[in-house]
Image (cartoon, rainbow, N blue to C red; front, side):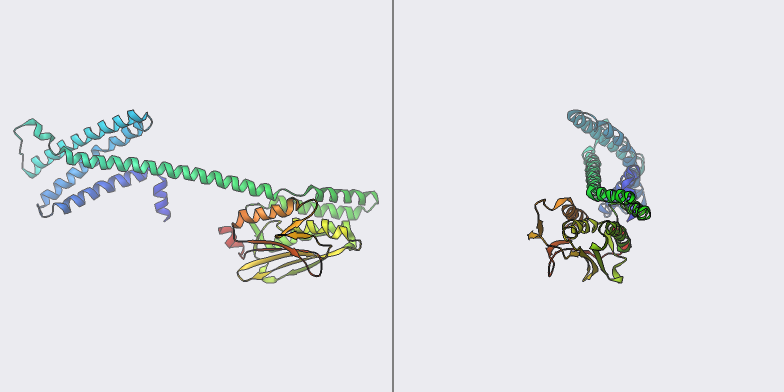
Length: 363
């Protein structure tokens, strides 16, 4: 399969392969068609010689047609018609001479115009050659245009994914830097130093991971732990986190930082609104042939209509961002559901195909 693909990608090699194969095929078909006419080897030799002459005489047409394709439509049509006819005429003369010299042992016609007989048969063959040439050329042009369009679409798709992925909420950075500044002011330099280190590690992870590729869930969990450690410095005992990650899904491939905006929403709209703080639960497990990811909180909850949060400030960039990223990566083969958590709070569930790291790379 790969060898055939290389053949079609190399236009020079493709021309000579099709050109030679076409004339060999002509010789075989012509011989089979005239098998009952003459079975002697001399007739086979004449057919082979005629095919070789056709192979040789039609080569210049390639360069004439290549030039004609760059001209206006009428110039191209005139050039193609004249060159095709003259080539057919020349091939007819060569075929007649071959038949008279070899097959008829030096026969010569009485009239000069006899040399140009059987031109119609030759013309049909050369017209077929010309038609195939232009047909293949047009097909190659269409394929190239499709490849260019596909490449442009892929580049746009990748740019869109990167844009979605790098839309980090500036409030997170602002709040973190503000918390670090406060720690420094109250002389908690050691805690501030740890927070800077964790922020640096988290940002390095977010920038190093290619948004187009997926990462193993265990790497995603490590990044979320860094993020939550930063938030725990801000909220202290008010933020509690429960992890429920099945061991057999740690190698599953997931989009990088797909859960971070959901956790950020839970902290912003649930934990920060509760005087005594609250709990965030993060779950990951197999669900048939899929991977189920859930983030839930025990906050005051929110109005949910058709699986979308209804808040005064809207859904924000985070959840809309996630939905678009999932659609870009999985098409319609995913589920993204926002629902009420029981007894209270909000739960966000994501279902995506279960793929291990190597499977995701192949996609």
